[in-house]
Image (cartoon, rainbow, N blue to C red; front, side, top):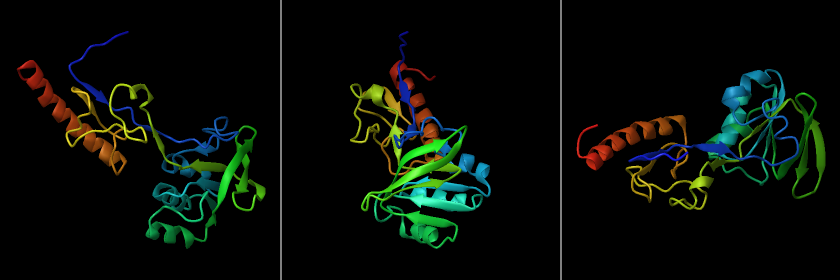
Length: 212
């Protein structure tokens, strides 16, 4: 149906980027995860792989050592994009094995993940290793496809907004991970929510000519 409103808040968030390899979708929730904080405790004394080279990937790899007996940190480049302090923490952790210049080619299992295939992008070497889980941290994809012809987005698809969370269309505001910003965490999303509620209240008061 069609709905009419004096103001719209876009808060559609961002979804984890997928590897796009065989087995990823099949084993989502049964060995494939995008949240170590959510699922890490399920892998106590297990062997897991973390994919990515960002702060999030390296930080979550370190976090997983609280539970997993071994964490294999896989990154397609020859160095991490993570901060030096996080990188050092991971490299010095005896439970973490780092594999640079490496990508995941496929994920295997029966009712859950049991192994995966890794490929070295420089040497071409391929190996299949037994694992119990894989945590994917290769960035986020903003949920804005439906907005591409409506409001201004940046080159990555995030909503462009000013300090008052206003977009390029009057009456359309944005909050949370879907907007263009430096840091995306629960705390910043909550802050956006509080701010946008206050801004909308003032906006509607101006639009209607009386307090709401």
